[in-house]
Image (cartoon, rainbow, N blue to C red; front, side):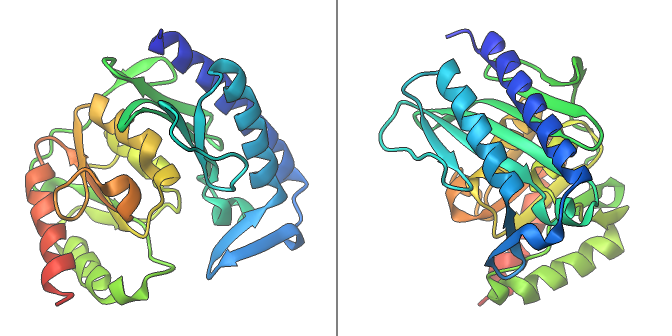
Amino acid sequence: MNLEKLCFDVQDIAKSTGAFIAGEREKFNPGDVELKGKANFVSYVDKQAEKQIVENLRLLLPGSGFIAEEGTASSTNEKYKWIIDPLDGTTNFIHGVPPFAVSIALMEEEELILGVVYEITQDECFYAWKGSKAYLNGKEISVTTAATTSDSLIATGFPYSAMEMLDPFIVSMRYFMIHSHGLRRLGSAATDMAYVAAGRFDAFYEHGLKPWDVAAGTIIVRQAGGKVSDFNGTDRFLFNGELVAANGAYFGEFYDIVHNFFTDLQG
C-alpha cells in the first residue's frame, strides 16, 4: 500500500467535504439540529458529509471497515478501518463560530497509519502517515520544545457529559490558568490535536472523547514529534475517552500533572 498517495487522496476527500460543509453553513438553519445528548448536536450536514466521505473512501480502499460518528457505516473484523468525524465542532458550526473540521484516520489492525484533519474555516489541511513527517498545507510542521508548564500554552475541552469528572477538571483548569501561559478551549478536539502538532499549542488534554475526535490528530501529533496517552499512561485513549498530548520535551511533566488531578481527586 502506498500510504503517501493514499494520504493525498484522503486530503482531496476531506477538502471536498469541507467545501460542502462551508457551503451549507451559508444557508444553515439552526432549526435543522437534532439533540443526541446534553449539548451534543447533529445536523443533516454532519450526516450528508459522513455519507459523502464513506462513499469516497470505499472507492479508495474496498473492503475496509468504518468507525464513524453518525453511524453511516460500521466495522467488524476488517484489517483496515477508517475512523471518521465528518464535522468535528458541530456546536461551533451551528453558531457560525470557528473552528470546525473534517477528521479522517486509517487504522491497520490496532495501529493508526494515516491521519488528515482539514480545518474548514482557515482552509488548513494537517496530515501525516506512518513513516512520514507531519505537514500543514504542504509544509512540514513540528511540535514545540517548551519543557515546562510555565513555558506552555495548554488546550482543553469542556466536559458536557460524565459530570462526575467536573470537579477534578475545574481544579486542573485552575492549576493551568495560574501556572502556564494560559488555557484555551476551541471546541474541536481534532483541531486542538492538529495545533499541538503544528506548535501552536504545547499540550492538550480532555475527558469524554470519542475515537473519531482524536484518531487522525494522534498520528499527526506523533509524526510531528509529540506523544499521546490516556490519563494512566496507556495507549487505550481511542476507546476509553481520555487523552493527553504534548510535545516530547513537556509530555512527562504534563502527563504527571493531569494523571494526578484525575486520579487523586476522584478518590
